[in-house]
Length: 338
Image (cartoon, rainbow, N blue to C red):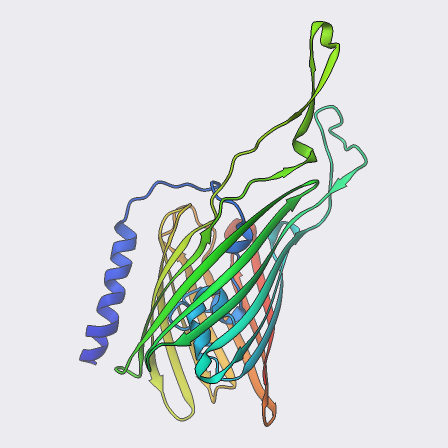
């Protein structure tokens, strides 16, 4: 118990106190590629997003790319989420463990919206045209253990956003590490930096305007408007996790993450997962503690993972997240190990 207080509880309290007391200018709406901020995986979401130091499956590509080094087989993952405001979010990934070489993987995420009516100042009821908006991210992952206890991983990402006749392209890199201490049923400490990359700028024919010039507007000039460039939503995560209970039949994992974004205030995620026989899973957590003006909050979830044949294991996971005035969101996923 003394080790628990010394190596887990005290560092967690220090992290929470530091985040709660840190003063930061809010920069909401100053970054591009918001698709990069949609959380992935009902398991992680059900634990309140406290997953940086838990990451041991294919969804680690999003939370901590170094965590995919924990994968021991081949894995595939797919999730679909119907978010608020008629927004849809899909994520798919595959990964393969290549023995001493490490783990390689690939992922794609797609953000989509229903078509909307084009309205202008002259025709506020609608011009009869429709437009849509969305984004896609395609990435590659590589990770490996450099020592018996220290893992590192990288993501390399292509990002594209579009709205009507305009689009924007960017590239980003994620870096993640994880260190396992052989105490307290393996205390895990991890950190990751996500979305370090290029600025993004919308271009396309919608920024081409015809301007009247000359006496009486006799001359018409095609003019291209140049829109601002915006940074990617850079995110730093630091996490601690530990198995408070680890027996032959059951396991109880607790985790805490501290997050520093470049476009909002710092916040803390906290959560836990109970496992019975690594078949049935119950999860709960709280997302965005101490974040100013956050609509996020309580999360719960469960999972069922079952080996259908000797080398094939199927996982079904679900999570619920409260978004306050934006109503709740339900997450579903299918995972396969083979």
